Length: 292
Image (cartoon, rainbow, N blue to C red):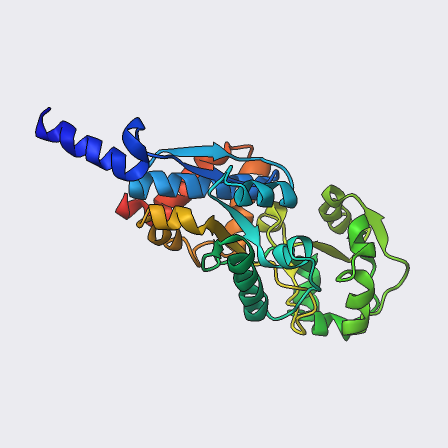
């Protein structure tokens, strides 16, 4: 056996026995943003480490993705701090970003030996939006500013009306004035209702793709009413230990995906109908392309 074959066999033994190197399995939940993030993570690993990556993208909801991570069906996936705290750990929602991240990081490590990496940079929480012209005319930047304006016609999704971090608490926290009962509708109709002036303010999501291309203003939640839903990679500790370069490769993405960047990526897939893989590759070319 020549030297090259010996080196190849030793490398294989170190990773997964002589059967060849173990793959890293990247998962995601089943909506556009998660599919894009799953592709970004998979391609980043392939580019930076040259390790085979298996994709289990579009798995399903939160609990399915979490169970897949716990049982080893996947090695990592993107998750949101507020979702982990309330849906997985069954704890009350918190409002302090650092405290929520610390709570989920500690609990995940203790209960499942799962590691939360530094957040990717965006916070996919509820966002109250108004038309851009309305914000400019009234010099509105925050929800406190909106509370000092005339009564609002609100457009909201059905879930927002029922959630403990939804409508009732928002109205109380800011003493927002409304001109009538909020109009409830499917989430996909919120922006058209705002554009057509059927409503004056909507409860949307901070990383919605349409918010990247329409003339809307996201009002700052200056009293920190909404819980944080910072997105970060959650990975199995044993996987990070097995592939020493993996943590560093993933942490190169930390802080790179702002709310605005994520809105743009979501719109590229949902609005422009581009493949998620193509969108992910374009993002990585701009952020880490020099280190390919």
